[in-house]
Length: 131
Image (cartoon, rainbow, N blue to C red; front, side, top):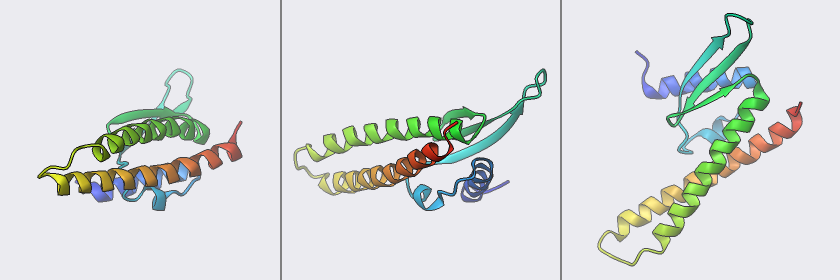
């Protein structure tokens, strides 16, 4: 059985090969977990499509553009959530848990930064491959 890190690396390698985009440095430590990757074939039409599970959410796609579109929406949603959580944490009154709160908002801020980088890269990629 593969370890989690090895499994994520394998999923990334397969995805990167399918879509033709390398984004490992933006993905690393971003809070994004590539959990599993599946190839599906419609037995009637013979058409192939893919399913990737990212942070417990499924993204179905046929090509690189479809992946970048759906993954961009997931990232935008994550960033919005992190923005709300960051604002909430920074507005908490000082208390005995201040160190834990500071660690949490620093992590959220870092995830926001990394995912914004990834979203920018995907946006540029989508413009290049737009059908």
